[in-house]
Image 1: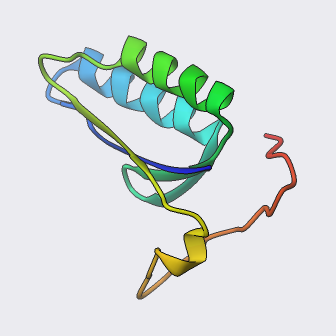
Image 2: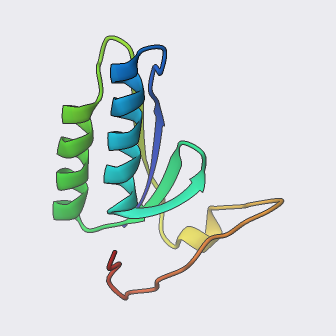
Length: 97
């Protein structure tokens, strides 16, 4: 399944900036960045739960915002992009980082 992960981490403090880096790194391990704080991830249910659990551990619920959007398949029929795009489609191949 395709999942879009969006986050807004409060970076006013040093700890916030650290959380931001940890959240971005966790997302990189599961998908590709499509905007500054937006990742598209192609995952199965188990990997999605793993990603979700990791991100919920990282964010500060009092200061940050985290959103997951599950895309309706096929993704190509429901995602429209304009402008500069560097999206890589991995098809059914595993993402190895």
